[in-house]
Length: 117
Image 1 (tube, rainbow, N blue to C red):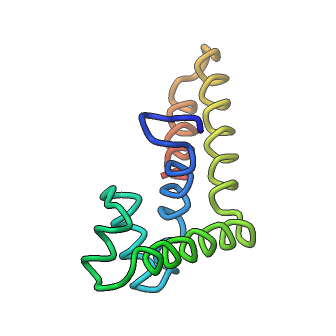
Image 2: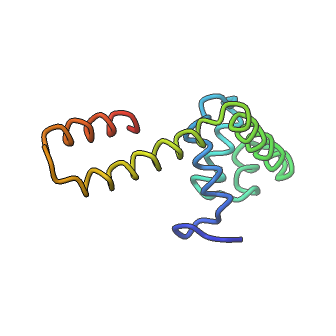
């Protein structure tokens, strides 16, 4: 599996999905997800903490991941964000090439920053 910033790609993608949709998970799903993906606890450690089997912990994490993927497939917020961020980046490159009225360009750049943050 590929790696991004020392994280498996799947972990990175799941963390990004969680940033967008984590609030929509149940409290238990969110807790298990955070412990596994963000705190890097093993299934056995999570199971011990909650008094369940490692399989139960794994099942709960799988359900949480499936929900996050389902939310993205229905709502597409992460994809829309990526498209907007790419467009903003391309606009910034164009503005960098323009050598006229800096005041207008600064105003447009400020608006772009508001759009993506």
